[in-house]
Image (cartoon, rainbow, N blue to C red; front, top):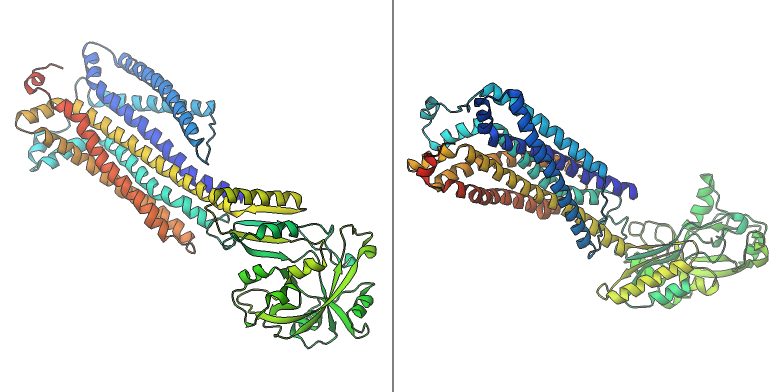
Length: 605
């Protein structure tokens, strides 16, 4: 279970880590580009007044270093403050977060960002000096502009060439964001349903079970009559019966299977199919269920048999309480049981393919007291005989077993030192929190006073499991929306740099009659093109991963994950990207473009 959970966490966290590493790389490269675009005219001016390439390169790198250093300090302090805030908020919830600061992580991030900035600056400087030694590069010729009949095409031609790297960065950011929104909202629930530790798996969380108490082991050798020693092991039946007497508790199972073995009187060639299976067929298959002990003849005589003709055989028996029988067997194949006769041990239940209603058996039950040990068992052992009758049978399809089912109420009346081996309970009143806490405390105390017993609180495990899955899903969703904010900031920076770089062009467009809304619309159209490309690529990427995992888990129900998790998160991501970028760009560039045209045209930059 722990191994499965670790795999689940790694499966969920690894894409998130990769996601943010890629974000960091692309973000730093993009910011370096924005910074460099702002400094192009400044570099040209330095070259014009006599600065060499080496000196201007050194000056720009020094500026970049101080920006990097101040950003590192501010972001480190801000990150720690945010983490402390999250830790404080989590103290009010069931999922408490522990802050684990690592200086090594900070050093790695600092070195990574420094290397990326240094490489980015040098590549951009090399390209700048190659393409524009002492002037700004001209990217769009008059011939190219005349060949375009539509303003959008002309705009895209110029925009696409000049800001190719920025556009590529934005496309990659959007692609990873959308891909992560699809994959990230899918994988936590997929992993939960596919792992062994699965809240939807009836093999783990049994039926409607809320609590379970069961023995860790049982059984012994023929030498000590197959009695598990010490006799007091198991869940105390007296205290358990007191707890389960409350009508708000449904007893799904209360049973004994392996603490001791009852013996049944049989002839050498019995007519009963069940006895025949364990006596004759077992011998043919080289299995021996005949009980052989120095006191076997004494036990046969006590049961009313003839030791020369009869023997004692070990049948598979499950002792169950009346309530748990009704919960486990919905409908009998034949016959019915009377509650009083069942609890008194007169009536039993048997498999319909091996027994018929009315079949009778004679049992010999070895009874040991609380002081019995392996050395003194002969002194403390007693034998109790009982005649039982099959009152009802169950079908093997409904209850996959060939065991005889006998009353635990009868067992504890003749064997008071024995205890329950397994108890499974359902809580019928989850709304009364005070009573639930009291019940769980009583069950924990019962575990404490019982010997060799394990207590499982399935209700709490389910709650914690769902809380964990929801927390992991929330982490993914929060990561996606943080990334959306990063993308919107990148888009705003990109638009801001573009407007600053082309401010005179925009003002000239306004001078010949273009409205502010027209310029904004051109920028937004180009950003929408970038977003659409990234969304399509991200959908393909995330969809391919989801399809791959769906094929691996073809036996798992997944349609509700698609409908209620993946699709809503994907739609919300797309809407936020489109409308967020629209609002962000309008607010960022409007104040720059909405300036006095004559004053700006007369300004010498």
